[in-house]
Image 1 (cartoon, rainbow, N blue to C red):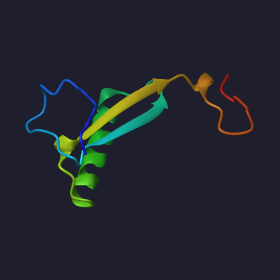
Image 2: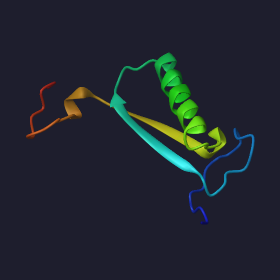
Image 3: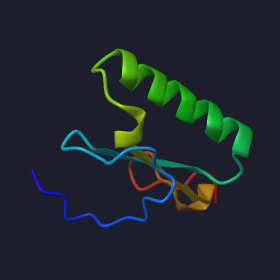
Image 4: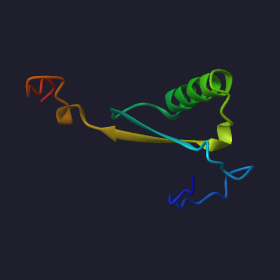
Length: 80
């Protein structure tokens, strides 16, 4: 599989392989960097143990949005 995703890889310690995984996490605004680092550690720890993925092959993107942009069902926006 040839990747068409071109990214700045200056922070990588090794080249990515065909096992590359991109994880997008959608969450409400306000999470601290400490919380995000804990989420990353938990995800990477699990993926390196379970399927045995190299953490250098895992890219995580946090996307934050306000609660007023969430509807959990029926079109109801309960936080607006």
